[in-house]
Image 1 (cartoon, rainbow, N blue to C red):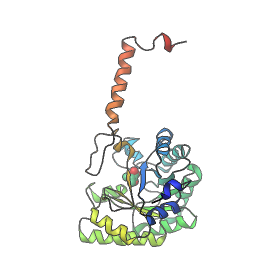
Image 2: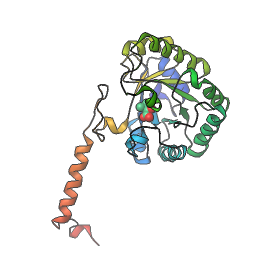
Image 3: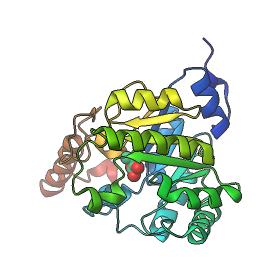
Image 4: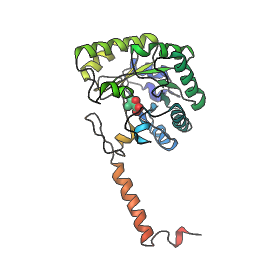
Length: 272
Ligand code: KIV
């Protein structure tokens, strides 16, 4: 089967739709800075998410709530400068779109204008539809995000799996259809039962991207620092670690310190 992604130039929302239609899985990962985004681009990542998880992994906050619109624009513009092909999606931070669709439009326009990104992502279902609708009127593509939505952690009280009960599962399935009808081009499904994610994926024409949502979704996303093993304290069941970079980096740093202390660095060839 020929690959839609490989034969595409710039990845657009239309390419992602064709990939779903062709049953071709979508690869998405977070990035928050130029150097990492460059590596993702070189590896052929289709979607790069400038996630508000930057609040956790870049700034050390406990939740994603404190990150601001200015911070997100700074991270997003750094990523955009590294990328030519991948679709760059930017999380709208907490407090910039909920309950006020005019403010949502203003925030989304700032992200697009000041960072040069391709799309924005918002957390929530029915309750944010007015904001999604208004952002779409400006021609800005919107990705939805359902299930464990970290900006609502104070309401949930825990990062446990969502939609285990029938009522919440039904609401999520309905929200997914509402987001599709409103015009979202894709939906992230975070930490929900695999069977529910599979049913939602089947019920939608647009692609779903899972994180802790099993394999019967149209694509997968992880947080870059988690899958590379840079962060260590976070190890949910769904996280596959592809490297233990924290160990490799600390070993290199210790060698550097030792080389300085032992007068090995710099040597004669490393000076002018
Ligand atoms: O902020 C983020 O990194 C995300 C992903 C976990 C989907 O929203």
